[in-house]
Image (tube, rainbow, N blue to C red):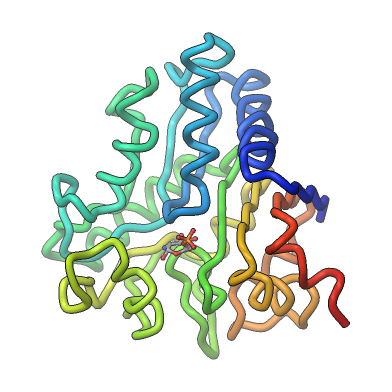
Length: 244
Ligand code: GLP
């Protein structure tokens, strides 16, 4: 694990975005694993700026989002597709046909899991996987549990996750109870992981994930196994490194 700690959020976002831009410029056909949530928004803004400044092109890039809510189609304002369209897809030259995300509107969820997993297997090793971590230690929607799934699967969202994510919905009942998520195995198979976490609220789970034992009850702890993990933290999230 290579640790990068920043006092200012914008410096963190620039450094993390530069890391992704470097991967794309070294391989214009790069396959990117993308995460959603508040944490990577700044990184996506800096990727858009790099594109606008002609420092990178997404023309030949292919993207794979790690998760999507079950029951929300692409057009749904709270879908992760809508999130990505708002923060990245609509602002760069990434062709629509090179964007991949689980189809939350699929009636046959297990069929969609098979489709997406086959797509990921066809893609092989992703060049860079952008990740953050949920307050309960989830990575994507790989929720804490006695076992973890290597491959794409349907997951029941924990009440804690639904509660935390309800900030993006009109009310808690509107938050889906299930999601489709890329498995941990696909994520840690990536050539490189760019992991971002910000804010004091994440310090406790980061301590468990990066200083605790590898434990399926803390899915983020599996990232300790990755040989090319680039971690970007602000000083508040990095507090765990200095506490006893
Ligand atoms: C969401 C996403 C995860 C994300 C996590 C943290 O549920 N499924 O991919 O990493 O929660 O989100 P945030 O960055 O808003 O803290």
